Structure formats: structure tokens, C-alpha cells
Amino acid sequence: MDDGARWDRTARCARRGAPPAAPRAVAVVLVLVAIAIIAIGQQWASAPRGALPVGDSALFLFLNALNVFLVFLLIYLVARNLVKLVFERRRGALGSHLNLKFVLAFA
Image 1 (tube, helix red, strand yellow):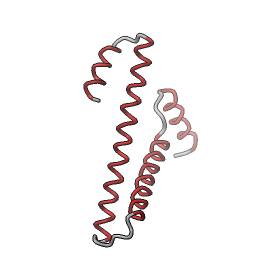
Image 2 (cartoon, one colour):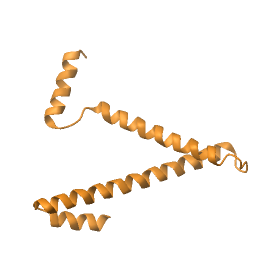
Image 3 (cartoon, one colour):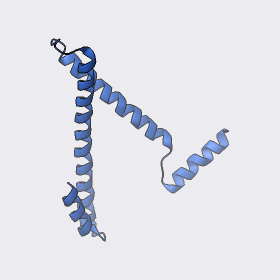
Image 4 (tube, one colour):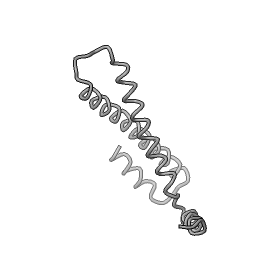
């Protein structure tokens, strides 16, 4: 693919409002790195215990770090929806009352 075609695709994505795929890939990599750092930190913090084999302990810590990350993500998404809801209600947007009912039902 030449540079002209790549820039045309990026320009079309920008016009449509869709971001190019590269920032999404960077975000996914950063999330995976954050999960790995949390898992390594938890393993380092619990190093004096030697009751579990290293493989089982690493898997447990990775899953625990993943749960912590997903809880923070859930809190962020609910808070973001609540903030959006407040601004929609202040602006008097159509459907804001229905959106309030949805947010309260799923939160």
C-alpha cells in the first residue's frame, strides 16, 4: 500500500468521525502492559510465601489483576454515563428521561 492510499483512508476515517485503527491498537497494548505490571507487582508483594507453585501463583495473580482492572473500568464507564446524563438533562435533549431510566436500570 503506498502512502497516498494510506493517507486517503485516514482522511476518510477522519471525515466519518471514526478514528484510525492505530490508536486502538496502542490502547490495547497499553492495557495489556498495565495488567502485566499489576500482576508482577502483586507477585512481588507476596513473594515471601512459598506455599503455591510459581505457575499457579502467577495465574492467580494475573486473574486477580485482571479483575481489579475490570472493576476500575466498570466504575469509569458508569461514572462517564452519569456525567453524560447530567449534561443531557441540563441541555434538555430529547430522550434524556428515557436514558436516565436505562442508566438507573443497568447501573
